[in-house]
Amino acid sequence: MSDVERLFRTYNAQLVRYLTRRLGDRDWAEEVAQETFVRALRQDTIVNERAWLFAVATNLVRDEARKDARRRRHLSLLAEEERDNVVESEQTSLERAQEAALARKAIDALAERDRLALLMREEGLDYSEIAEALELSPGSVGTTLSRARRRLVESYEELQRDREAREKNAAS
Image (cartoon, rainbow, N blue to C red):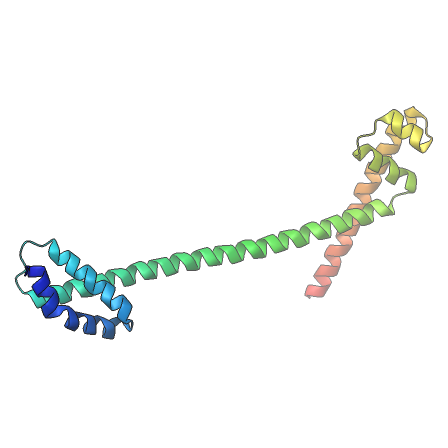
């Protein structure tokens, strides 16, 4: 019988009982005890066998607890970061939706010819195509688009000011 077999037969039951009480989990206790005996295999000499085995087992549990605490902190930080990202994403999505709604209202507030000229230009139609579609002279398309853009900006900014004023009043 080898020294490790003798150590195992002599101390395994005590070590597993100790670790089970310490960890509250017999399977985990058996794993730690097994790792303790594996480490004993690597030792040339052990002066006080029982003390050495219990010290190694205790240190393995302590090391695992530290690793577990680090993992939990890391997971907690990741979860917090993910919550922040979700909240930020939801806020960004909401803001985008609000901005899109304002833009849509601003476009709808334009005169029909201005609105159609802008939308056609946005779709890539050139000035001659816009002129033909809207029954305008080709020379007036540039003026129409310029005026439409200016009115769109004015309308959008006014709607934005109104929204900000409503939000400010709702907050107070």
